[in-house]
Length: 111
Image (cartoon, rainbow, N blue to C red; front, top):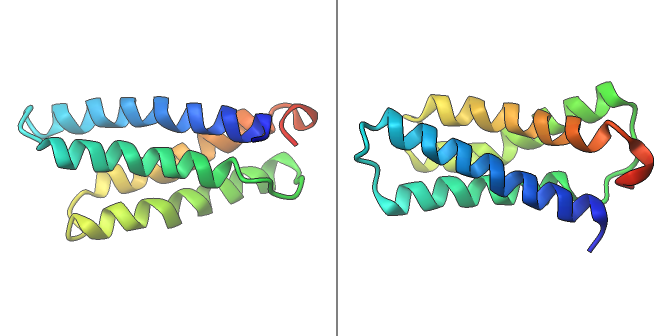
């Protein structure tokens, strides 16, 4: 497992915790354990996909790639909510950008 993958998986898990806390608060502390777990797991999968050994890219293209991957991965969760959880869907896109931004800040360390 590459350093990029390890860092991205940890980042996805941590962002998943942030996302779960936000979703739990937004639901008035009534979100089911299955919903909370699936949202967290979606963010871990996002970390896995972003952490894949992609071709080196300039930072702007890497950030765009993060947004696209965030959109694609988060769409799976979004569709499972009956297209109701707009906030988590948009957050997933932003999390993809955050992960790529974190990884692309120093190209040589994570490729």
